[in-house]
Image (cartoon, rainbow, N blue to C red; front, side, top):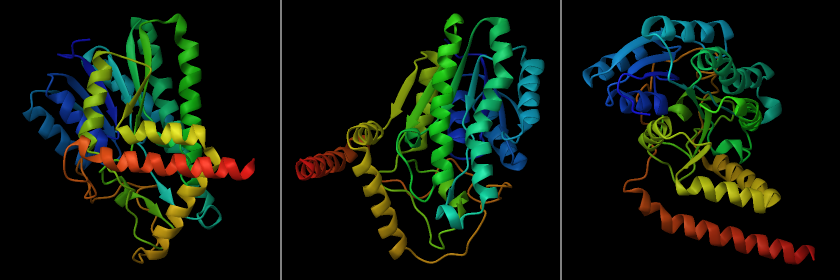
Length: 322
């Protein structure tokens, strides 16, 4: 698919990977429809994208609300005469002991991260089927394969999202030009963790290596042009996927241990709902402040070391069991 004048809908476009994606697509002369809860931030993104040559429609949208998502799809179709690519990207995060985190928070995380994507697919598929083509991109993250201790609601949503998408792909085989594409990026340098609901009482930061969200945005552009079922962004994404597939119990224990050790030493911070229930007015850029300097290849020595450690630990555990 050549992207000039194509209609691209992006949710969660006010910051992070969604904002980076809007800027990447804008450079290809697309017609953008951007949705998020923060209308002021969306208008800033609109101004940047128009400066790059795109036509942009802003639609304030809460993805956890099915009516909002239907309105987003209708606005895109009414304004630009169709939808070529729909990107489900909006998400929220909440960290804390499962039983110490309010159930209302877990519920909202699932509503945004799982039902929000389902709402998006439900809203756009009638348009795709009517025109007999379209690309649906789900930005799932490696969290769809690797559980996140102290983020149980997030993990439940991401595991469920991967299952939903796989089921949808099977259902749509009779529509060969309606294509569902899943992205599984590793940890990203976005403001998302600053926006997170935090019930740990400790300052949060992502585990290294942390990748540039522009890499995810570029992957979205590539998948829009050349759709494929699954795309892994960052070498560590595949490493974590296969590590958990080979040694699920070990990987789960290691991630829990790493989290507990980090939280023990992290700086104290006040508990907060973050942006779980409402938008925030800070950290609305594409990037956070956690990225590693250097090009992606810089990470390889760290990944190789982690792989060797994991394989050695797995071998030792298997020998002990035998």
